Length: 195
Figure 1 (cartoon, helix red, strand yellow):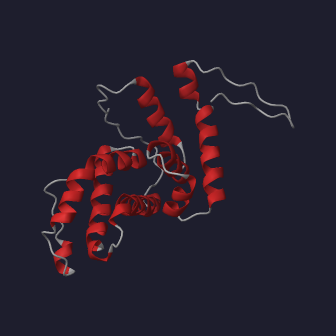
Figure 2 (figure 1 turned 180 degrees about the horizontal axis):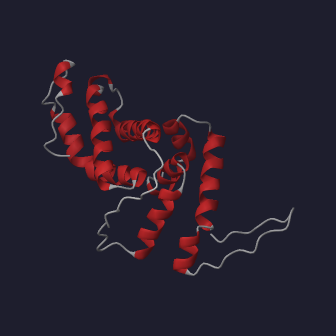
């Protein structure tokens, strides 16, 4: 985010006016913000997540040896930070009898498919959502995703497979876009899901 200021870096002895970092932020912020939005589902949370990841990147800037893999470093910082926030937030949520009013987001210009798919992604568990976003939105290989999430290749494959299966049977996606519902399979019978 152009013009961003990271005061904590001064306390750690990092040069506050490093042009390489500022050039990187100016060039890559829009793409990284899209990834952050897909992880969080909210614009303000996405901006906070990207800011936190860029602050961590800035603190490690002088130690980074391979600037070609800088996007991967920032994405990994975003995923780790998001998981950390999610775990912390989970402890702060309490059930209530009264549901507060929810503000309505303005999605002018977005297609219905994009909105429905975004909502379906938000209904996925955190790890599934991260795996799907990295695989299909960021076009990362399964091996790269395993490195970013810190899990095995088999875990990535099964997580993505289960997430896609959940998306294929998501009631909103089926209802909005006329995808025919699959008849339940009998035990031992394979179900062919539409691609």
